[in-house]
Length: 94
Image (cartoon, rainbow, N blue to C red; front, side, top):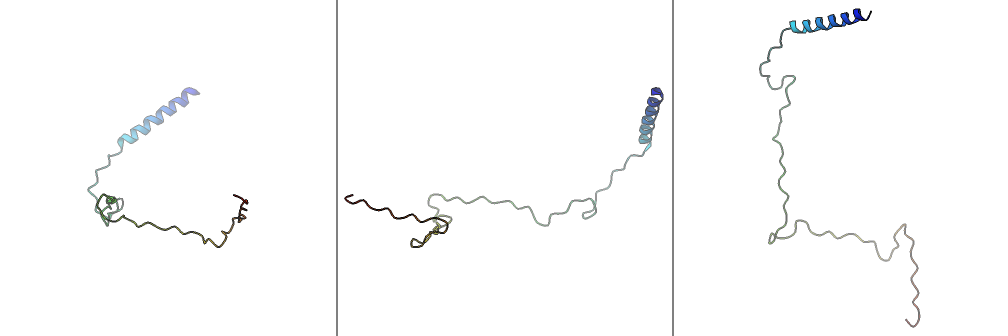
């Protein structure tokens, strides 16, 4: 039983390799025309190359960006979400 199975497998492998050897080779295709299927999409614009970031040097003028003043809460209004602290009592004779 094992011998017949092994023989059948060997014959199948030989017949598959023989069929593949009989198939004609694929001819080399001529250069494809742009826009035909399977060709890469042409780039409409040249690739962007980033320029160097300017760095401030000595004598190069004002800084690149002016300093930004950070907003502060009003001093006479309590900040929402924070409990106000009672003022500390001054000890007499300090």
